[in-house]
Image (cartoon, rainbow, N blue to C red; front, side):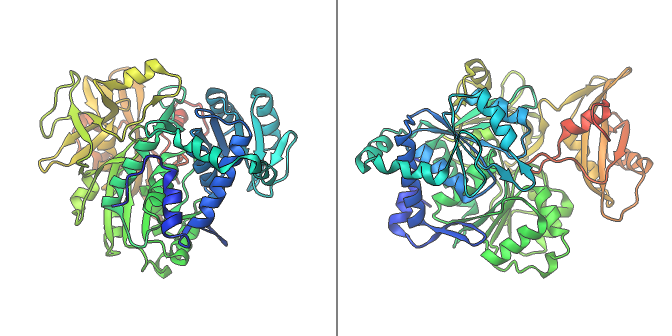
Length: 524
């Protein structure tokens, strides 16, 4: 197991001293070893101090999954600043919301990413947040009132090594390191504050299950997501491994990156694995370096698990949320097909995990209740939302909002989100149960169920289905299939076939977009 250090940024110097020539970060031809990573982080930390950054100040970054983002993150948190990631897919209003809410003193930004020019957005955002300084990354074109990154880093020469060490020594394990904004499915996004200790603890626990030697991971998740920052980048850093960045996910580039960079741990969400397995180049891809494959964020279909099992690799799944910083349940060695398709494994021994009823009494095996979590893994609260923080906890236990049941062997089977459950004719309906039933059909690739108003039953389910490539299926056949596997009150009252499902940046199905289609608020 890797050591438990006080600050997540301490791992940079730790490995720079012990394995200075080992690769730490890779993007295409850019290769950064631990010695250079330590040097780059120190130089940027010194520049931040020279710019007047103090402990608790927020530092934002608008960038792709790239070594730049992680160096900025490590430099900022090493001196007690709180880092905020901005997704390049955000529209201007979304960028404005996060910036106004977090109020960073510095924003590091790309000005051009693929075919999007951010110059106009930056000009407007500067007016919204006039106190923030902007620094342009890489060789991107400069905007008005923005400094180039090379000039900014050079300004740190006035900071003494003693001043840098003093600032770092003042950072405590429970101090927040970053803010990650939740999806906002129940309202405006809230910023979850994640501490140094929570990141270090969660990454060490994940190494017990996901550790590989040598450790080389592929990171294509957006930088505002816990999967990118915590589950892959920090996890790999804690283990002294190498993160291979992919600025935008594509199945072909994912597969070529695994083969070229000899990736040993392949992490993703079920959607990214499905797309990779169906890429024309998959059968010709050299996957001999891959030791372990693990997914989280959503349940994997039987089809996906069967396809992955045929690869003969170690497979695992897990469960966690932004607020738990990392995964808190895992399947272990030799997990069965049933465990991989039906459960998210067992709780890690370091954490407390309970499933409780509406009165917060523990439920028996097979009964549905809400998952509560306790331990060093938890976030420290929502940024400037004391009431929301209080409501999220019960006597120190975090209320996840996820519904689940215990299996007889002590594993956890997810049922769905508490907010997704709807009543139809007096019955509680769990959309995920219906989706699993639909995905058992040979012609169904993906399914998503949302609730719609009904004059008789109050609400009923409507299913969106993505067929398998080349498969022919009609709603009547889906209706019959559901009636063969579900009680009649669970059968969706409507079915819509899609060529593909709208996805959130992290790869999950965007159910709000689907609901909007039904409501006539978005194009079909």
